[in-house]
Image 1: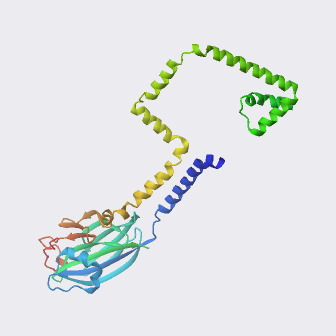
Image 2 (image 1 turned 90 degrees about the horizontal axis):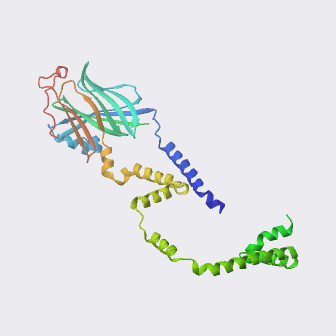
Length: 154
Length: 177
């Protein structure tokens, strides 16, 4: 009988403990650094070649409606939060990537594309952890450069 | 407290038949052998008889009809909907029930957090990269988001004047999204 009388208070205590534990586990820890990978692809209509190394992102590239895709360069770097890393892009261009923050399992990155000293594009994109986005357009060798920018936490 | 004082407290309940078997036997045995308690028993019995007689004698004079009518009216009476609601809410707010509100809240939170697993459409939408800001320094830009392949594309178009002198490239028309 005593146990039954104490049941509501025990349920309440247990619930608060469960809630507190759940919130502790749910709180995301800020990872120490980000692995940023840049895939530089040449998209053109000069042939029907599809580079086998790009098989994993074929469905994404097909959105662009070019006939040919060839991987020119692939580079990965570990970047600390708020730290900058510069990736050299064919055609005298460079891509500066700065991871901003990690929230809701998404990595926010600031990306700057430059041609020599001249800035071409500044953007901030929230990428799903280990996901990517595509930045394309700069002309190159009769086609267009397509950059696959991905970021994943360590 | 001596035995008689202890027993006297039980005599009335004993006479009303409210005691358990062992208590009943204990009181009966004591009263049988104790003149003082037997006197107390007789006093109580006397009062009881007197009350019964008085009630029986007066019972026909008591008008019970209005009493039962009032009870019946209250049973039939419909309480306003808001009063029922208030009563129900009061019941839920009462401490023992309020304790269950916390596990219920946890269940709701878990359901909300696992929403994406149960509704893959929403999940696929969240798997897309989100563009927060773009500055293309006066150049034209196209933004495409495609759910099926989870693709977000920022396409930078070159100026028709060809501001990309260093690249010495012919501007491409760009893809037909």
